[in-house]
Structure formats: C-alpha cells, structure tokens
Image 1: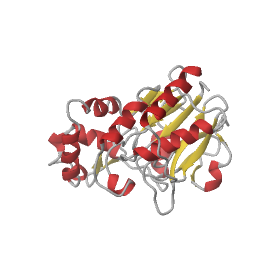
Image 2: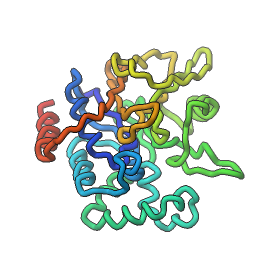
Image 3: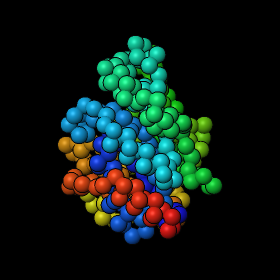
Length: 281
C-alpha cells in the first residue's frame, strides 16, 4: 500500500469526476497511499462540466484531498491565476483573461490557500527517499523556446510527435531529467513514451481501453518511461477521463477510467472515507 500512488492530472474543476476516480481506485486491490497531482486543477470547466464557473463544492473537494498525503506540481492555470501581471503580455494567458479574472474573485482570502498550496513547485522528484519519477505539468524545461515561439515549462506541450524532445532533451540530458522516468500532463492525451537504452529508440503508445484491464510493467532496466495519465476532468472524443495507479514496488502502472456514472456522494462521507482508510494503512 505504501508503494501505491494515485496519479491524476488536469482536473479542470470537475470535482465530481475526481470523487468517482478516487472511490474507484480505492476498490482496486491494494488501493493507494497518496495522490500525485500533475497540475491544472483550474480552468476549462466549460469543457469538463459544461458550465464556466468555479463552485464552492469544487474548492471543498480539493481541500478534502489535502487531508491525504498529497504531492503536486502546478499547471499553467495555477501559474496564470497567481500572476495577473502577465495577463497583458502572455499571449496564452491573455486569451483567458476573463475566465482568470472570474476565478480570482472566487479565490478570496479564505479559499486562496487552495491556489497557494497548488502553486508550490513546478517540478517534483518522487518517491522522496529514492526518486524514480520526475513530475511536471508540461515539461521540465522550456522545450518550446525559439525566436518565433516561447513557452514556459508548465505551458510547454509534449505531444506524441515530440520524439526528439523526449529522447535528446529529457532522456538524454540529466540537466533536464535526473530520474529514470517521468510523469506529465497538460495535453489531456493518455499514453506513454518508451525509450530503449540499448537501441536508443523512443516510441509512443497511445491509450487503449485494455490498458485499464492489466498493469503495465515499467521495471525493465533497459527501458525508460514517460507516462501521461490523461485528463481526470475532461472527456474527449477519443479518450475518456483517466488516471493511473502507480506501484513503485511492483514497478507497474495501470489506467483507471471514469465511466461517468453519476455518484451523489455526501462530502462528509467522502472525507471520512478518505481519512479512515488512510489511517488504517
């Protein structure tokens, strides 16, 4: 149990999906000990839940998650919210100025602790004692930095076609990636890179439903992995809402899927369930 982690990313204010994924992850044999969050709790709620607003229930849910061992890196939305001075100069941020202003109003002095807690680090190396994975939202360095286009690390996208970035600038550069493997989000595309240290070939494996049926082994010492758990909040045309259970003892990860079935979960029951199960471990 100590070695099992729930990895989630890109919630985008869909707190009900997170409740469903957590309760589903609890039912998997072995459960999980803590949560590793890869950023973007805020933003795009119109894509996640069909309405553009940040609710009190949403903020209460993320506050509940803080009662568990919770490790997180910030996403581009957390960064934008905490840096209003960039609204006029950052092109991507400028495009969401109205949505950002609405959310800043809701994050008053009482709930501002939520964004501050989510904003502590752009990069994490976990597990803490013997790190195997580097966690980041977009990338661990500014991989899109040219005369034409610049994106900060948390705004950078690593897409399946970015083999050169992954192979040379991540797996091939210890300044950018010190751990054997990495976890990333931002793209909302679940799947994983596999890099062979013997053949120097990097491949992308797209998510398919069978990945939720059996664990995937990453412990082969000749391979390195870059894993995207997908979006826990947004259901896309080609991909469901997903997360992963990572087992750092068995060296496996397994996708879990939010089936979207409505769950009317009482908040007090949800919080009590989280705390009691955690204490029993």
